[in-house]
Image 1 (cartoon, helix red, strand yellow):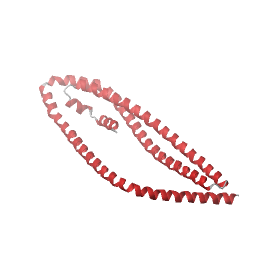
Image 2 (tube, rainbow, N blue to C red):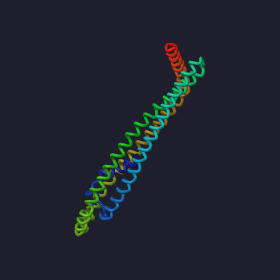
Image 3 (tube, one colour):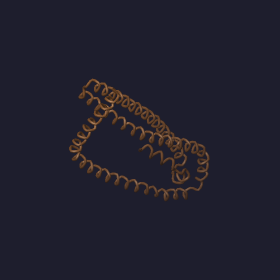
Image 4 (spheres, rainbow, N blue to C red):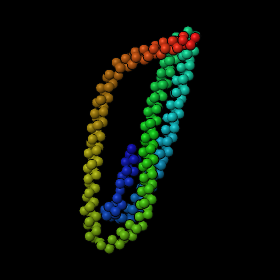
Length: 226
């Protein structure tokens, strides 16, 4: 997310304002282009990684779907042979793979959204870079002429540069807010851990009931088909 924040900052940048505030506008413009090129390369790399991760997650989900189907067939075979304990174990495995598959499905959707966001930012930054490159020579020429004004422009730049304290103050408040959120999250986590043991016992009971229900249903279907 830090990379996306930097990209957003570059996309919002007003080149004319930066020119007014820079002590060496020509150097600043070159640095701006260099920063944008570096960010563009990083975003492109992250987009590729995000897409690759999405494909990997899809492969994992497919593996668990196939495993769940395999354990279902094994449970059916065990029931047909009258081995209920073996059928229960197979159904338990099937449930596990189904739950993992569902988890991967959610991760795939989250990854897809993230990849689309990165791709959108990449396209915007690429367009912004092209526009900035086209304007740089003109802006540099304009600034060179403006240097003739001398000390008046220098004084103006120094006064306008004080506005940089505002984003610093905003960042400080953001950091303080993040620290408070982290403290609250740790407190909630401590409360959740205290209840985990009891919750696990009830989840185990519910899982056993579900397996018994699945076993009963499987037996009924095989009896009807016999």
